Amino acid sequence: MNAEVPTKAPPSRFRIRASAAIVRDGKILLVEYDDDLNGYHFNLPGGGVKPGESVLAAVRREVREETAAEVDVGPLLLAWEFRPDWTDTNLPNIHVIGLVFRCALRDGSEPRLPPQPDLYQTGVRWVPLSDLPGVPLLPHIAGQLIEALESPVLFDRFVVEPWPPVEH
Image (cartoon, rainbow, N blue to C red; front, side, top):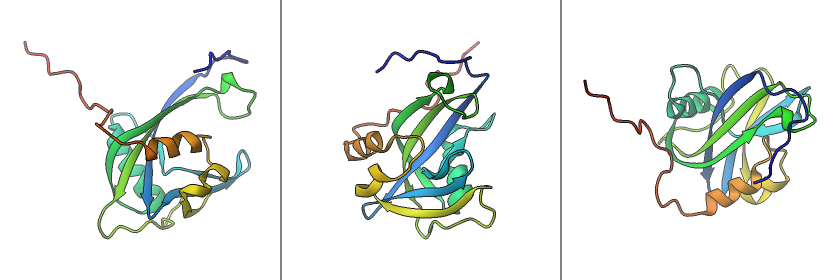
C-alpha cells in the first residue's frame, strides 16, 4: 500500500459506495455512462448508501435502480478508497470508500436499461472479463476485481452487526 500525500485540502464530505459484481457466462455486468466530467466510461452497478440503509440493502436497491434487475448479495470481494486530495483531479471533493460484493441475478431477472435511468446513464452492458482491463471502468479497479473474482471465497468477510445487544 502506498503512503498517500494530500495535494490539496482534505475532502469535506464522506460517502460509502456499495456495488455489485455480477458475472454470467464469463461476462460482467457494467453500467455505461457518458458525462462531461468523466467522458464515456463504465461503473459496476452501485451507488451511495443512504442514511439508515444497510450496505446490503443499498446494493440491492442500486442494482434495481440502474439495471432493473433483482440480485442476491453474496460475499464481499473488494474494498477500495478514493480521496480527491491524493490526486490532481477536478472530481468532487468527496472521500469515498467502495465495497464490491459478488452478486447473483435472481431467477427470471434480466438486466436492462431502466425506465428512468440516471441522468448520464446510456446503457447496461455485459462485458467479457477478458476485456475488462481495457475498458474505461471507474474507479480503476479492473485488475483487482478480476483477481478477487478468480480467488476462492473461503468465507464471507463482511460482517453484519458484529456487536451483540447490550443487556441492562
